[in-house]
Image (tube, rainbow, N blue to C red):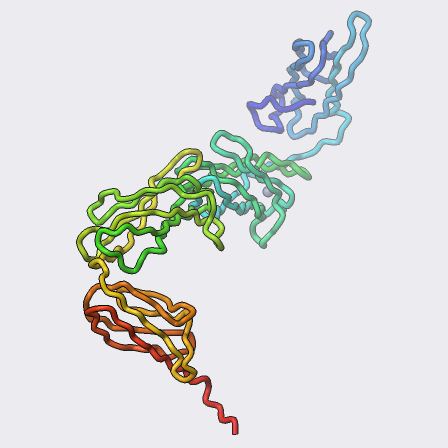
Amino acid sequence: MITGDGRKSWPPDAGQGLTAMRPCGRIAAKGPSKALGSVGSGQGPLDGTVILALRIGREPAQAHIFKHALARRADGPFAHCFEDRADTMATKAVTTHGPRACAVEVSPSEVDAGTELSLTCRVWCSHGCDLTGQSVSIRSQDATELASAELAEFDGETHIASALVLRAPLKEGVHVYRAVLATHEKDGVLHEGTSSEFSFMATAHAASVNVWGLPSAIAAGEHFRFKVGIKCSAGCKLTGRQLSIFDHEGAQVGAASLLDDVWAGTSALYFAEVEAQAPFVTGDYQWQVATPASDMSVPHAAGSCTFAVKVVSPSDHEVTVEAFDSEKQTPIKGAHVLLHPYRALTNEAGVAKLEVTKGTYKLFVSGFNYIAYENIIDVRGHVTVRAELTMEPEGQEDYR
Ligand SMILES: [Zn+2]
Ligand SMILES: [Zn+2]
């Protein structure tokens, strides 16, 4: 095989040196071809590459076909013969076009580290050449090929290689890659090799933090439990991830690590149950749950959310609410009872019990398909309220 010498562009200028490379065992003599300007030879390792320096003919724009032959010689095992057969071949003119233009779109331009992004490369030649079938190679900063695709579509102006999918590196920050178009020659038209840079940002995965299952009101100084859930923007497994609870003064009042299972019905919401103690003074407090950043193998950003903690005086009175259907006089199961800030649901017998502190409350009882019941009650001891709910009128059709 004969190639350009690597330092100069192909095809070479007339009279320029060329290097012939061929893996072979041993070379015994230099090529005797009369058509070559000069032939040198060297000897590589037994299993290595022999490099022959050749000099091509002085006619410009002429195709030189070097014929290589092995010939047994009397004084050595083999001779490698190179013969420039340019004089016997038809001459061929090669037109060189300048670099093709290449534009790369990255989607999305900001992506979670280690997740996929897709590229669309548009390539065109200022001479309007058909570039269909030429390939685009995507290379990283260290020139490793990450993907390649053929120019398959044509939109009337540019040739497009689409559906190039890459995985972003795990390292956060801006990454600069290149789309490389190799030198390409076909039908006497040579397109020089070129490349085009593009960049994207790999970011740490975001954490969305949630709190649920908090009691609506907590007696001062009482221990209470609630759930904390964390979901990674890339859906990573978060088992073992630490979280801390901070009170209204920023003091840590609880901690937990996420369990192995995801919350039922979700794909990647990891959760933990946390216990904390309410402040001793009644009032409305803003607490915070926070999870620190981690960079074990995948960069994860810190996350947090605030939640309200309502602290009331210790309950000392019991309010019993009995929900009944006003017409059928049957108990209503599952009715919502709100004695702000206390809440409860009625049981099978239509009964809900709430432990509350002394005071005047607005009572709401609502049930599916019922008109909500409303009343003001004064709680100074144990109270029982019978709430009769009326069905919502169901259409006004006249059945006569
Ligand atoms: Zn062209
Ligand atoms: Zn993640």
